[in-house]
Image: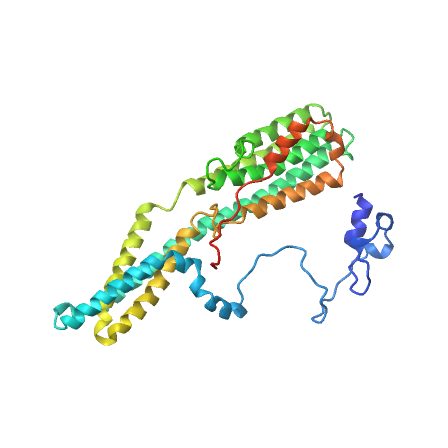
Length: 380
């Protein structure tokens, strides 16, 4: 797509009444846009117009209209499935306490004051808040790192096209195509490096280390810049190498999150404290509630242990489970953007002389990998 065609496609507003939008016009029509295409147009959004659609794919978000569906799906909740053993254990222990009270109602510990337990309940809530916040900080940091990876790979792809593309006087289309492929392979290799994959599921090409791909990017760029002359070559090369350094920084930060869990002593203390607090709760209410203590214990155990389990699940944002980041989607988005650059500038024709086995190796490098694991029939 040439520059005039791009300006015409972007500058021409979409018409809700016409059958053919600016994105469906022929290249000849786009190459000679009218003057109206360059005028700023302020679109008016009508509540009765069904033609508005976001061009960016957005994930599902919870709304207040989903409350009934979420309540109905509680028996199939994945969180409930994971904490079911905690709930069963607390309910069974509560049944033993009720039986003990029915047989020995005059024991002294039935008269205990609930105030100490209430104070400890406040402490358990604080522990859960700190635990969940620390886990979410790790989750959000992982998302910011992959957001930075999306931005940096796009900028490096644009730089490769700008420095070595057809419109440059010292163009090197083969170098541009190779760099675009390598840059697009880095997120996929990084994803496979971070995710836990069973041994033997990935081929040796896909199991390549991200540091090796970054080294290949740097070496190929160095060879391409050696052929260039001019006053800005060193600045351009330094800018490109800064992009490679950013990739290395993102790799190191992701490895730090993956290899450094929340301290086990903190997690274990929170789990022990919460378990003992829930197990001793029926002693305070068995006199007033009797067998209804089982329902109260089930609800309290589900609420507290679910919050704790959510903190455990989001602690590792690079897991293969449904609770981790969508690394597959982000890696594929980067690869799609860079492939569009390859298609728009027709770099494919300059690499037809590559050996078939080399083409197969490159395709294997940027494809494949693990997918999200989700319990069948379960919701979050």
